[in-house]
Image (cartoon, rainbow, N blue to C red; front, side, top):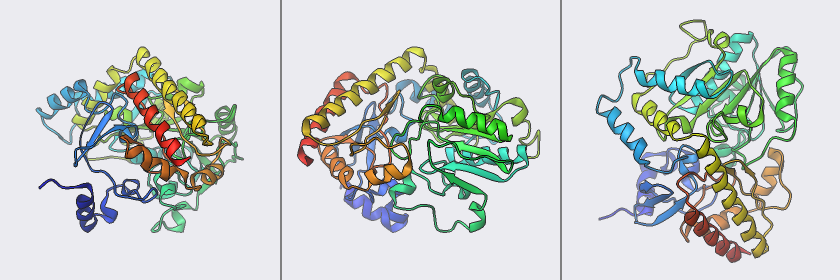
Length: 420
């Protein structure tokens, strides 16, 4: 007998908290039963009941080429045939590190991890080790993974669950974390080790930096002797070949990456100049390690992905996202629904309101108005899968052809009229 989504969800609840391995997947913020993916290809996912969806989740970012890209599969299969993990250095991790460093000015050395959370956590530790200071400044609504000190006022999964932080995090873990409003340059003194920011906030919907914000952070950090950290787990190698540094013309001191660089397999990395990375063990006193860091399957998938992301690919990604965003705006206008569809390059957001938000407080007012869950289910039942929460974004990729995008727009138009 074929399992249904509902049956699998009930089975999952018996052995996993909420039946899932990441809270947003539980559909708690939109209601209903999550679909369980059986297989995926290109712009589509198909659930265990055989229903196919046009997918704009794309694993929350890694699927920039689409699911199961032949070149990526070929690379992973070839790597797996040689062994899946060794606990020893490999050619693949050197090649991936070289490729990443070649794309971004100032990124001279890096350390691979197994997740974006590890990358951000390690980058914070590095900044503290380099400066000898303790204080971290982050911005409300920016999500830097689930490490204790960075969960305060996080977006994405935290916000989708209606949480401002997390139980189990001791007061001491966040005692040195200051949360500032996004798009406002905070006061930075000589106690601050690092200012961590998503250069484009993509975990509270899509909120672009206002003119001068990132440059202002750069100047303020320089004046105070603090380091600037760009968390590019989402924007890295998606906005542009050189990520947000190329896109905005602002260079941080430290970077954190993930998602795209693993081609769909678990990977992350953090990096900086040779001088700063010289503080990382075994060269310096900042310890960080990982049994599966630099996993040969992940490095193979990441390299295969990046090889396909040339200058032409980024032009095409922007074109696809623009086609989608333009069509969505028209669909909502025609239906008479107040909605905003912000776009930053290949990233697309969706807010059901009439005033585009610039910070987390403004986002929350829109996200909590109850419109998104209704729209989510209307498009889902018609065959388009969006993220199951109003604090996420859409990830159109190279697999979303014009025909697929146009079908998506038609479905969204029908859904918009249904909830009008």
